[in-house]
Length: 216
Image 1 (cartoon, rainbow, N blue to C red):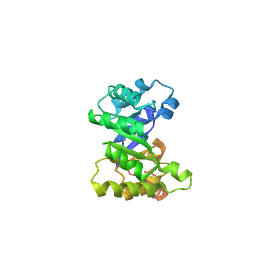
Image 2 (cartoon, one colour):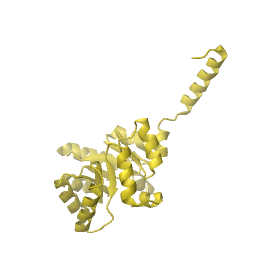
Image 3 (tube, rainbow, N blue to C red):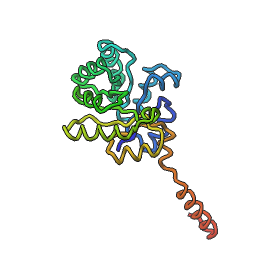
Image 4 (tube, helix red, strand yellow):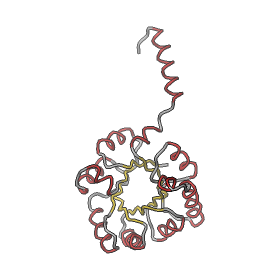
């Protein structure tokens, strides 16, 4: 499973990239707004930090405008994945951009039927939103499982990018089901390394080592 970090915070991305755990980055208009920076400037900086795909989202609603914006975003760097919404216009834009050889991430997916359409037009990534389904008392993981089965049934190469991940349990379940990628906030990614028994064991080892009076 590949790990993408879901943020436009350059410092957080750089810290995690140095750990070797980050395979890519996802951004969206809300994250760009939170960063308080120009979208082209911050996206370019992110692309310079990570070698993997960096999703940059269009803000238009009509296909022609999405295509124009997507081409502009793709010029930032070779590792840009143009992010478009899962609407009919977004699917049209996806088809054009993928035919031009650009990576495309189709976002805001909430059904297996939507994911099927995205794969049909050649999306590089499909982004089903786990947490937002959980918010309305639906099972986000059930959607991941459905998309996995549909894609496997027909040999679609579109990668399942589990999004709106909020907990370590989300990551584990998505990995067990077979999501290709999980994108998550920096704090969730860091939290995957944490376990109280690891901390307890380390404290015991350090205490015992101190008793020996030795140094390394």
